[in-house]
Amino acid sequence: MKKYIYPISFSIVLAAFTVFVLLDTFVISQPMENVQGQINNSMFGNNTINTTESITDFEMSETSPGKNSYEKQTAMSDKSISTDGASLIGEYQNEQANIKLYEYNYENTAVYVADIMVNSSEYIKTAFANDYYGKNVTDKTSSIAQQNNAILAINGDYYGARENGYVIRNGIVYRDTNDGKDLLCIYADGTMKIVDPGDKTAQELVDEGVWQAFSFGPALIQNGQIDVSVGEEVGKAMASNPRTAVGMVDTCHYVFVVSDGRTGESKGLSLYQLATFMQNIGVNTAYNLDGGGSSTMYFNGEIINYPTTSGRSMKERGVSDIVYIEK
Image (tube, rainbow, N blue to C red; front, side, top):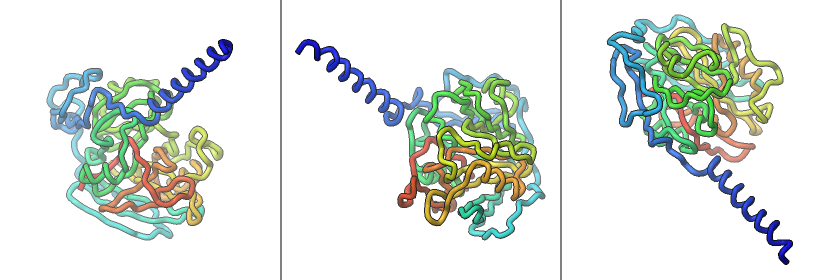
């Protein structure tokens, strides 16, 4: 009997360790220092940081009034996206933003495009699930949107599922570990660029005016040219997926794009198909965000697309974060 004690004990310890790792990785919520969502308005000329708690690891550098600040745009972009074959399914306008929502059918897939013009990139905001930055802290895109008075929202990059990759949100650095992947940066001057995170630290990017930064990828379009190969995919993702992407047409002129997939009505898109679609409608810079079951577009109180995983009934998946426009 003694000869079985060691293998049995080892098996029990191994099983317990495996369960712990799985829970720690996928289940247990871990707010990191209970850091809540914050906004650094200093880069828009308001030299204050709105915060409920400070981030001890990454304090903002001292700024004098006007340093690293940008004038708000005084006119909307005069460029337009191609809407050939599209249906206009929603509109919204206030003093800060003009939004038109279109539905396309591309490659046997329903694709939803929010055409967004803003007076300043300050109005392209982000929010965390439960207003906390942390591992496995999740909520539905629609719930986070409602909590933040959003008229329009899409899911973000699901930062909480990874240990690395810069996280810069609303001008605040939350994570400065580099994962070596394409980084999407939205700047306070209204531009959008794909950046190699190995070239700059997260704080250096903020000092240069980065308002939002996402680490998921890959880059889809740079300088109007497709930047992804025909067979390229995200990890072990399926070739045809629901997708979420963000892009820039012109300064302060953006698009949020979400496609359906994995259903009888919508096959889904490959990364190359998504890039081709966005290039066709006139996007100059584009970047892939978390897709699959996470892909969700919320507009004016409703979910616009059909969030699903493997063809099951419509159901939103909890995510770490959203990108949104406030009412």
